Length: 99
Image (cartoon, rainbow, N blue to C red):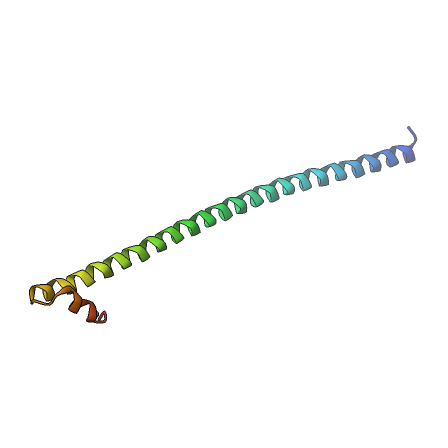
């Protein structure tokens, strides 16, 4: 083969080899980007699940608070009934404010 053709074919080979290396590097980067995207998607799902759980817990705490207030109101009424007040009088006297 003539020296200049040999040099041109070597340069072409090196050019193609460089392109192949770049494509391989880019595909590896793309895989890493896809893995990162999947990781963030999983984190997003976990965060939504955690938020739903927190909302349920908050609703449960609110219900417990309401029940506790009802029980405290009942405890406030019971001693007064034993003191001789009737229910109609108790309705007129609201429970004391929480301390």
